[in-house]
Length: 380
Image (cartoon, rainbow, N blue to C red):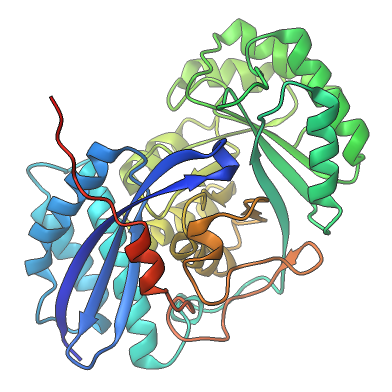
């Protein structure tokens, strides 16, 4: 089996879990001379990053063409070497490497007739709890609590909610409103359900604000607070960790193993968020989880894009003892529920090892990809 074609496909789609915002991904489709197809993805988020990633993928393709996808680690290393000048520590190069790497793992599993999870050593968990991963949208706190109760009525074992997102929730800006929200959520979902708070990019807490806010949240037993001080503030995070009870999560904005190692070395991160569509694919994610295990911390997949990224994240999650749960978007959306023949779902609040089908275990619908393809439009 030899790689015959590498295609980069920018897509844009409306995301109901993000107040119907238009979100952008760059998919990669790799086809072999035997007709096998592997799929990968980068979570580019912005249209300019989407088309920049497409250009990098097309340039990097020569490192993969004619190669056997079973030798995916060697290809991954050659992609890293190619980016020595323009992406040594991450950036658009890591998006491209991520998407190509996922597709190679998909093809390798198909070639060998086993799942990616098994290629990674097999599942170390029999099952894992599934939680709803949502954004707060509504102005009414009771309405948001009622909505969450509906999601959890399906068996989901908790929820993570994003503050500072699109919509009318206005969470993350006012102390009393934030505390009222957390109190209402805890009263609604009960003490036995997990509750995490994720601070969006619009939230700019200083250390004193973060300490006061999280201390107030501590009364209601949240499981973790995500990025309360942004992507990098080791001194601030050390202060927050010393003065509060809840776990601190961050890391999803890192690109490379070196970046995650830097975060882990601070001792301030309890839950390390990793997105395989950004952090150099399945290969990169696996390297990170190995280090998280060594530091005796928790890793968590930021699988908030397409079913391709979810498939990659599930494979890693089940192969690492550092991973403890899996997030699902509660509202149906095109890139999860239309893109593949069998969308991912929990079973009574649990998710099980993805070992039933070879590779990533997904069959991507080309007609859906075509429906959401993006064309570059330049305007003055």
